[in-house]
Length: 353
Ligand code: GLY
Image 1 (cartoon, rainbow, N blue to C red):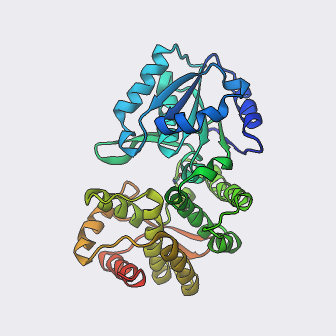
Image 2 (cartoon, protein in one colour):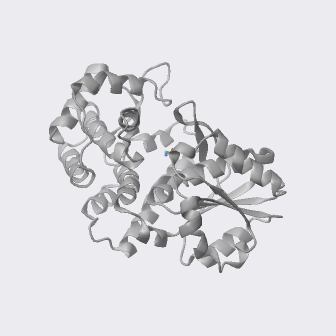
């Protein structure tokens, strides 16, 4: 997999001019959803390199991250005369960067693309690392490809207008990066004032967070080994997300990951010796900032069944990434049904259900 350049912008216009300039192309297309078309695209109007670009606008939200929307993007590229030397700029959250990246990586066997993420979740996770795709057959990210962007431009100024829920959703992935990296980064995330955000400090922390992901992806781009570290919190988190969706009380991805971290830190404490105090400090932060996803013991079997269908498993064995300590990662761990139910009991007790 080619290396992608991740740029922490010091002025969007200059960074974008440079990134577009580094990708020789015959025609530029900009993909947005209806929200980023209205709110973010106008911010690029003075950037010479994107003037005259053809616009592709799709409906927002995960429900539209599907084959029909993908086909509509291919259609506009085709009707607009895109060639293998054209360039796609994806401006939006993770839905836009995932779907746009996949559209680019498949059109005429692959054209170059640049990601310009506008949400915290996309900046620290979705837009970085080359995973692209769409949902299919009721399954999230079921169809996709590893195909890195030429550049990812991180412009944290977009975060000033992000609502609190989307802020915390992205922050959960930052918390995960803290847990898998260093005690210093983990501690600065736990002590950051999330009520009165210092955007200068947030920008520095976003830079460090992206660096954690980049380092891992560089070592293992195709998730054969250490990239599984990025799945911490996601085995249980995806089950919470799916249950919430099935019960028509959907939750944002990062919230499900935060609640998943509670269970998986408990499993880490029990199975790989993660320090109890660090688990308690992290759980306290999550309870304070994410509230609680309530469920009773009647949902345990359903959650377990959902975890058995996770695409990270091999031969039906539930695969966990756990921690021995902060930054000490134990991939390819398993837990049996009783152990997982014990983690659900812990979650419900500690979250006050
Ligand atoms: N979102 C986890 C990864 O990119 O591997």
